[in-house]
Amino acid sequence: MTSAHETPDPTTPPTPRSLTGTRPPTRTRRRAAAVAGLACALTLTAALPVEAAARGGAIPASGAGDPYFPFAGNQGYDVEHYDLDLDFASPVLTAQATLTARATADLNEFHLDYSGPAIEEVEVSGRPADHRREGQELIITPSAPIPAGHVFTVRVRYRGTPETVDDPQLGAHGWIITDDGAVTLNQPDGARSWYPVNDDVRDKATYTFHITTAADMTALANGEPTGPPRVSGDRSTATWVMREPMASYLSMVAIGDFTRTDGTVGGLPHITAYDPAGQETDGELRTVTAEAVQWGQERFGAYPFDSTGGIIDRVGGGYALETQSRPVYDGAPDEATIVHEIAHQWFGDSVTPKTWADIWLNEGFATYAEWLWGESRGGPSAQSVFDEYYATPADDPFWSRKTGDPGREHMFDYQTVYLRGAMALHALRTRIGDADFSALLRAWAEKHRHGNADTGDLLALTRSVAGLSEADAAQWADTWLYTAAKPAEPAAR
Image (cartoon, rainbow, N blue to C red; front, side, top):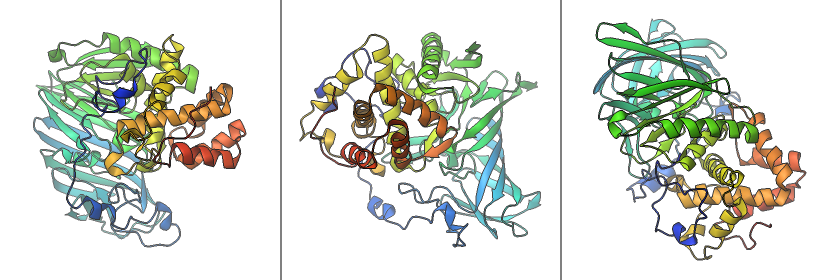
């Protein structure tokens, strides 16, 4: 994710002063603020890991073990597919969510993450099921226990006005009403605001979206349309499918008065749309997206999804999000922002961290892709960009946090996670050499395609690809990721 307008131009070397307050942070919605009770919330015992069920451990009431979001995600089952039937007449959403899941433990009851509109009915495998809501949890008791290994369906009907998740530190996310419709931007835990979900980054699933709106509106989502919208009177229904596994925070629908353009890039459907009320077009978006996809295929390997594109809307949050296959931009994006979000399709969307503590694997890789893009197009070298940031004095707040585990309240800190994440990768590049680093990028995207990985996996792959010793790999990680101080030595030329 990046801001729509504030990413540095990769052709202009940054200056150290840009790190210390003269330029607004990239993620303008990520507001840093003191929150009463946050320390208490973060010290609550995290849920047992998913593997606990396989070992015979008790399934906790909620949570999948993420250190930053202890109540997000659930255990005891794995979702395989979401079928979301959404009928939107602003501001009311009438919806039915059908989940297909496989039990990984014997289930007398199970939980879903959900803070959306009032529930009208719940069924499990076609039979009415008891349910109750506790905070952001939807707790379902099926009419009969579900044995481990059994595939079951959950159908939830609900209706009302979704409420945006407005976190004092992480800003507004989830279902967001716009001037002419709505858009969903779920990172990190906003999916629960508009559908029942297992909001665990490790529980990826495929999706089908059926979106009904006024006939004069346009409805978009991840993936590809199955055909033209089906019109009935003054309403129309568009169906979109995401056939590759997707983390729930990357799911997206956008409803509004959009101008849509369809085409292809490298044989892939290339679908873009923009809100004409913003006096913008998608010309640059289409061009740069196509170029970035082709460039990424050369650098990182095969594009991981069946289509590409982007959506320009007027959201009012000041940021872009790498929603899978089709990023959403709040206003017309600049070139660097588009490159950043397209790079995320490999790094973040296809290869997703196992927990949010490793978010640098998303943002550091995407930011470094900006540097590589500029370097490949006659701009400043990645080394010169690195040098500008490394010149920041050791006592500057730029160095005051850990990149590899920045803490929940700083997980979107531009300096700590984005810039220093990119610097860490550059330091690794100079340590192992250009050839091995290029091979590492491709191997990372291929080995963990449509899966999850953490920093330990990156270290293991670096040792395999580049022959880096375990001690050297650990020293790099400790220096650049897990020390809240300026490294004593810059990356070698």
